Image (cartoon, rainbow, N blue to C red):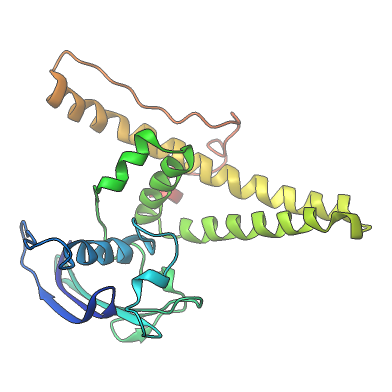
Length: 243
């Protein structure tokens, strides 16, 4: 897969930018503040629907504009795909695939696949565990786009459950309602955790190989994912579901 063209309209510092790329290595060179990182950020956004720099979409849209548009043309073998993504702060993003409206923005996930390293990635080592979980989830979703729905459902259940607990004193059916949310939270959380465990296990030989290349062939390293609970869906969910 390679990105043949990227167009930005009212995104970050760009009123309009059209970038044509070729297979192989591309370097963006320029002075500080010219928008090089903005380009890389939006390629990553197409792959994950998340920015590696900010938590919300508002800073992504050029100041004074209601929305921004990212368009990409992707080539994979003989397959050519055009993606249009409209980013509107405070509203659901809208997407088109080959000019046809997508049912949900997350339907574009898996078309663009990236491996990104940025200064912010130091938080994987130095930051909160939530940074590492989010990093793994982004990789899982690129490999299995349906997991974006699982993560969205999990976040929704967490919000609903939290709202219920805050209003608990006014809800005479608190215990029974809470049991329903707890059951959904456990099922969705187990599926996400299981996907992380499988991913880290599959990454282990690559981590070992790369570490040995840096530290010497006799050096060894091992990575594992240690969830707070030991029960996963491994016995019930076929591996093909996360691939």
